[in-house]
Image (cartoon, rainbow, N blue to C red; front, side, top):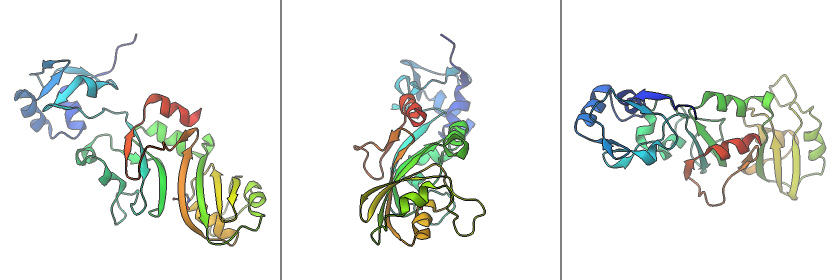
Length: 244
Ligand code: URA
């Protein structure tokens, strides 16, 4: 088995947001860090960066936060924004406050509008982020849309054609798959992530989306037991299922 990557304890804890190097040094000297049952006294000690570190290390008696790379699956609730910069309550406020100081920082993999709910991935893993959002990788995202008016019946063919031009854009959308669930409800699967794409697609065929929820990214579905606003760490199997 290959050896895990190692990091200096003070650097690890500072990168996880536990404080400045000076503050985490003080924490270590006070006996606040325990690894595999042994109190660490040297802030310069090398510690393994492994996924199960929270099961092995405690900080002031509580499991250490998961080290990078870290990916979370969240059920984004309605009414919160995905950006640090937009006004309003953000998805990052649903996470522990300390995590805002993590290095590398966490960011959402693509965005959902303030008034869209559902499956959102949040990661500090740049490669994963790129693989999920890059149109080249064709990762499908499925949205459940509720519409203002009954569909005409032509929407499926128009979306599947790969020729639909959205207002203000200079290239047509890639083909998308529509599944009609009722006259005013549909599941739409797209492989791109253009601005307000689903709402604009229905607007382009003369309709209006009144509710929007994402329930799938690739082969990963929103777990039924993940309530709006709740999140959990995505394990490696979950991550692999996105592309599986
Ligand atoms: N399309 C939209 O219109 N909104 C979203 O949040 C996601 C896709």
